[in-house]
Each structure stands twice: as structure tokens, then as C-alpha cells.
Amino acid sequence: MSIKDFTDKVVLVTGAGSGIGREAARIFADQGALVYLADVGAHGLAETKDLIAELGGKVQAARVDVSVESEVAALVKRIAKEAGRLDVAFNNAGVSGQAHRIEDYPTADFDRVIAINLRSVFLGMKHELPLLKRSGGGAIVNTASVAALTGPGGMSAYAASKHGVHGLTRVAAMENAAHGVRVNALAPGWTETPMVVTASAQNPGFAQLATTAIPAKRGAHPNEIAAAAVWLASDAASYVMGQMLVVDGGMTIGGFEL
Image 1 (cartoon, rainbow, N blue to C red):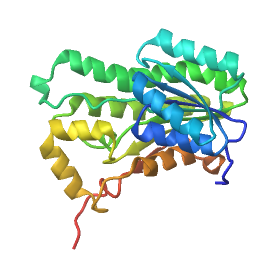
Image 2 (image 1 turned 180 degrees about the vertical axis):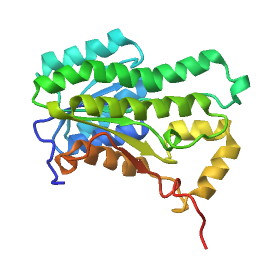
Image 3 (image 1 turned 180 degrees about the horizontal axis):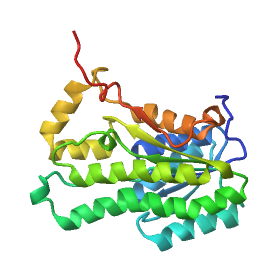
């Protein structure tokens, strides 16, 4: 990719207040895009906005609960009014949820995780797609997880939500490929984000297994995952549609090392 691949493009990044979302927003802005940041956390959102502005990027921000349709719709309407177009949407917001066996899993928390991780992707695409099409096409990247391929014990809500993101992405890709909109998913492995740090504290057994099972012998930096999201959204990935790109340091390869 050239350094200004997204010049004059308008990009929406949800979950932009930290981690992968913050890094992706920074890269998009560095490559010339006007970036709209969305996050439910006002403090992290402000930090990301200030970071991009200090680096000379073009940025706007909105505090949004992406599981609430009226808030998602209002954000996309605002983008249409202010920027007149949308070229890329990175639907990245998510939570890990609690760690319990299925029979002990609190139903309210299960519903919360599904709402934030899966319902939000549906709502995002529902409102983003019409504007993307009116803008002449573009790209959507949805954040799934290696948990869309595996069944991590104790994380039933998270795994179910991320399997759902994978399926929803493939349906959206099928429906929109002929309309100039590419839709793909990103499946990060163990990444050193605030959310993963919290999940590790709740489920130390999983954390230990995950880190020892990674052939790369380390977790990812959020920038490494964000770079893959930006690539999926770029013209360099122009023939990539309906795929889930796994970026996990080899975590899901399987087998064993001699």
C-alpha cells in the first residue's frame, strides 16, 4: 500500500477508544482518510481523537453504544450529512464477557455479549451499506476472533458471537459483492489489548494455555492486527470477498512442533 491509500476517503471505526480500533483509526488517518471514531467510552474516545489530531490527521468522534440501533443510525446519518459519503467501515467494537461453564453462565451477560459483539455488526452493516453503495462502493471489515474457529471453554457467549460475525460477514459479502461493496472479517488471535488483559485476569487457565500454544511465542501488538484490517479495506485486497483473515501468530495451526 502507498502511504496515502485512503486520501479523500471517509472511514468509520467502532471500538476506537483503545486497542485494535485505536491503532486502525490511526493508520487510516495517517494514510489520508477522514476517520470517524465511535466508542461507548468517552475517555478512550477522546484519547484516540487527540492522538490522531496531534499527528495531523482528520478525525471526528461520537460516543455511541453500537448495540442500540437509534445511536448507530444517527451516527451514519451524521456521516452522510457532514462528509457526504462513506468508503470504509471497520466494525470492531466488542467485549469478552464473563468466564463460566455454560450451565453457570449468567443469561444477562450472555445477552450483553451477543448484543455488543454480534447485534452491533448487524446494525452497523444495516445502516452502513446504503451509504457505501451511494458513495460508489467500498469495504466493510468486521472483527471476529480465533474463537470463531474454536471453542474456548468458559467463553460460550464470546465464541457464539464471533461465530455469528463470521456467518453474518459471509452473507453480507454474498449480497453485496455485485454492488461494489466488499465485506470481510478479521480473526485476531491473542492480542495485547485492554480487553484481553481483563479476560486473562478472569480466566488465567485460558490465558496460560493461549500464550504457550502460540507458535510465535508471543501475543500480537494491536498495530499488527490493525494493519491487517487496513489491508482488507484497501484496494490491495480488491478481490478478497467473504473471507475471514486469521492473524494469530499460528495459534490455530494445530499439530505440534518437533
